[in-house]
Length: 178
Image (cartoon, rainbow, N blue to C red; front, side):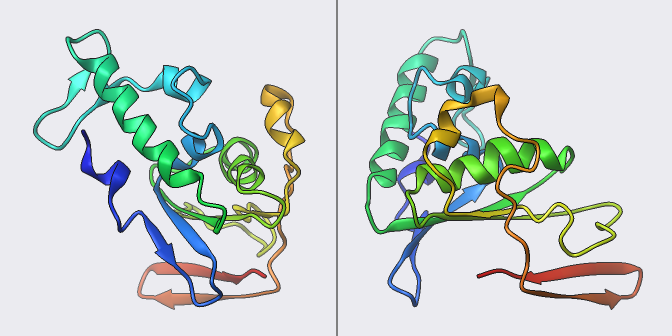
């Protein structure tokens, strides 16, 4: 079994008393499916395993390992204090796709007080602080039932404040959400 699915470091206690699920990129899409092995995202998983022991869909043992990993992930997601999803997104593109199917769907799956936030590498940075926020809060559960018909803006959470930081040729946009 891939150890990160059940790692005690996957869920962190926040100072507010809430708990946050740490997601590596597309894990956030899986959070919305609550570990459903028959979900659209689970059916798209092409390989599972650890760094040196990957197996591909169709290989002997793939289904068992995938089912085990998703069952472990599902066990983490049933905690009622888990109300925050945080994703580090790599190879970023299609901000509206991520907002609808990753960020807003994760927030909806975490309940009425759920919030989901993503951090991504943009090139170029959004021109406005409220563009492509990769944040959603208080998304109704019915959002999950809309599937491919989710709204383009998909419950964008607007930042309360923001600033940019320039370090050499690198520019960072920092946004504050509440």
